[in-house]
Length: 222
Image 1 (spheres, rainbow, N blue to C red):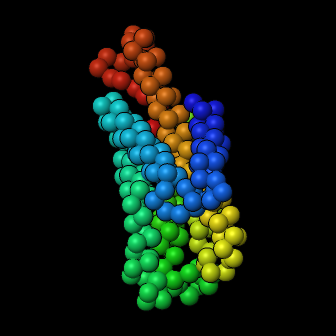
Image 2: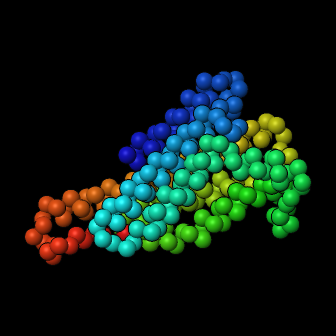
Image 3: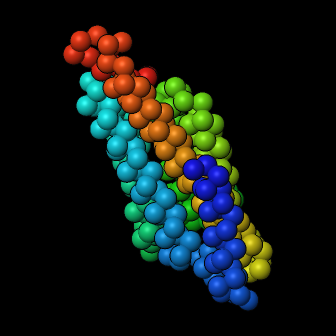
């Protein structure tokens, strides 16, 4: 699965570039393109996987499912924003025309601080998410990669595009979208690996019911 996700990240941008050559950036760099559609699908899958984990944990009687419901809601919101460019519309129609900026972020264009704020909210929730995946080494590693790439993507996206030439902006935005896709795929891998580990543990329990106390179903720490 991990190899398939890596291959998807490597192949899809190349296909999108080839499909629009010589305007290789046109299906990747702008918003509401095939690239952002794919990113929204990845986030929806991550949300669905998180909901499934939360539901399994809920059925097993654990009280440790809250983080997964929060993750599902967060991935769902990000998918909605990615598909319909919500924060870009707010920036372009409300914040940027009024020149609204954050004084301590001088490199950020008016209105572009929205994504930075979303990233900070995500980082505040990171300890909770870490506890949710720490039982699975593979999921932990994927989470670290996903969060690191997300931070890089947000940092690149926050740079004022007026400071770039047109060609440089195309390269920068294409690279940012590719990093964003890689981040989403890594986070999806973290969810999928945790789900597979949980299902494997539940299968082991069902195969050896005599090892469990009567009336109880134990699972690894959520």
